Length: 403
Length: 166
Image 1 (cartoon, rainbow over the protein chains, first blue to last red):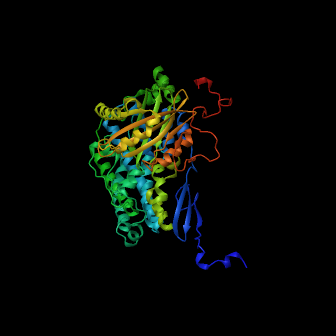
Image 2: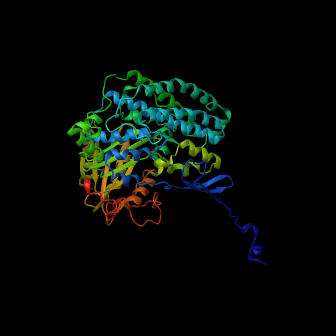
Image 3: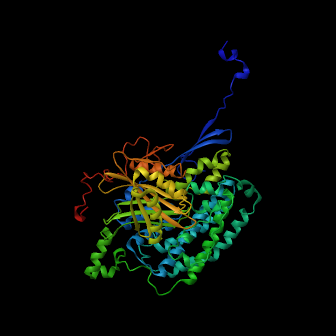
């Protein structure tokens, strides 16, 4: 007879057995390379432990050996769903260090391209929420329009995903009539498609039942976890960098900051939906107010390649051409922090320059990395399928998470 | 953010911490304070809980190494969203004894940012609940962002770049 049988049955403590589930590192539902080790009680999550760093590329270290213009391609690869915002954020950091003043035209052009990028970013996030709840149509339908935004990027700079768009100080050249045509086509065609997507999901009973009260976060908790962007606004805090510390002439435009109430998946979805309408309105205002006959870049000869015919015929232009390409420009000493409202929140650049050709220290404040740490707390006690849509509504982008 | 804001915060900090506020300066519209590392936690608590200053939001926490390679720095960016005032707090510790008290008790969001700083620079945050590497592999035995580890092997001669002086 074993010892167990001798025991009084009342004294036996029933130990619950949990199962461990590996969600990721490569799982189709995580939309990126990061792992969650979940401790499961049936279908309920008891504990989650995220592991990040699978695509860590040491950008902060790489940046310490690159001239300023060559750091832009690194920023492309942070939040690759909205690379232009990252590019512009980096340019503005350097411009702040240099004390450059941009003409209004360049700033408005930046606003247009940043708002297009925001729409592209939010399209990815919101259609993927639909996809994860079982509505594939919206995903395929709106992605056509994301492609049209990429056509606009392509017409401006030649690249689609990792854009490297513009230059420190503005744009390298004015946009072609074709680009303006594409932007106008987008502004005309997108609202119709977007309205259909809205009709498909926003008041859809199945979708609402699925997302309301799923993965909520309170405003206090969101603030203590340093949330920013749509996720913080969904919890009810109306903080938007574009309004709090306007950059690139955002103060000239009239727009509202949509906020939610409960910070659940539905609120995050709705905040992004509203933001896309606001972005469309900002683009229209920018086109309307766009000053004509102004240069598209600041007076910063150190960062603009001189025209080719001058490079071939003129000594000074040739010298400048080589200095710029080799990155041998004079940079003032200084320490700046500059931030923009990225697709996911406050994207900050903390730059220390010692006057050398490369930054002494460059730190990216990546909103994803900071708010993803609240994920274990948000999914505690909810079902696995809810945890998946909570993650997709938080819009965790692996590139930004790992830098 | 202007000189007035700097003066106001500076006055309050000096009143409470006196000589532990080593430097107060305005760097590109950003009030910036260097604090003695023994008092950093008290200063952060004060800035967060003081009713008038109310820096309730930790925007960013990161590390750095000074140019002489003898000290490590920890940089906090705090934000008062209601008044829209930001402040930068810096503290420096000796590289051989890089102990800084954790800020996770004030802001749970400091958790991963401190882990990242530990991962990159080896700053040991005392009292941190789970201080281990986050982006690099656990087996790594160096702190890669320190200046003693140059990005490329300097002894390589297949990538000689004498022409442009690098």
